[in-house]
Length: 272
Figure 1: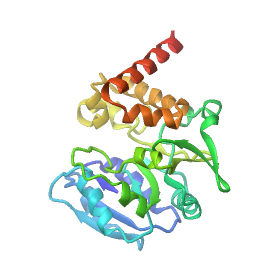
Figure 2 (figure 1 turned 30 degrees about the horizontal axis):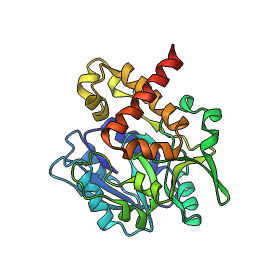
Figure 3 (figure 1 turned 90 degrees about the horizontal axis):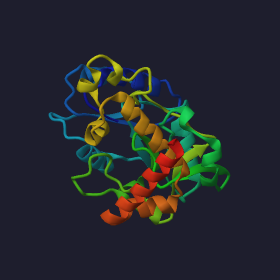
Figure 4 (figure 1 turned 90 degrees about the vertical axis):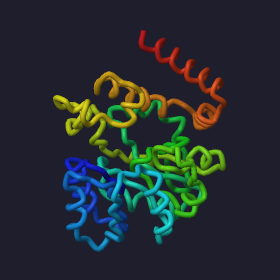
């Protein structure tokens, strides 16, 4: 878990996680929080907490992930963001699947709203893996997932320009590993989704103070527009076959532009 100045979310998330009876080991990296999160981490007592690392600077995600890969002693590893509430028992559920089925890559949760899930649209992407069912996608959200540590190390990238978690899920999918969400669906609540009642961005001045990085980078005008984009992204995940996703996101820029244009025209046609 990597955190930085998100005490309100962190307090909810860590209480929710430590109330889970699953057996896991927790590695903390604090990116120089100045809002009291560092003190909370320092005072936490739980036998499942393995390492608490306090960075003197905010170094983003790249350094912490590589530190974790170097220090992780477990066969299964992953990440939980400080604003995500997973379903009860998710670490055990995900890890049991991964232990039993070596063809599974990254197993994660549905981090959009439950109302964004559409069973009929998702059906063609729900596959059997041994005795399990999984909604297959080319990737899972980097905010809550588990995978075999050997796979994570193999597909971790050394490209320091990567903003999020620096491991390449598209390469995992191209290699034949199955990424996705357990079915029946493992739902998780994203406290930082502007459609959540807990989102800080919805408060007066919250957009200027707390706007998510992905929202700022895309130039959205406010939380409503950002929320609509998240809903559209959920629809893309539901309806786009894995092979098409791989082609779209590994294509040359001009081919990627054409694919995105086709998606946009399809979306406009459906809305009109």
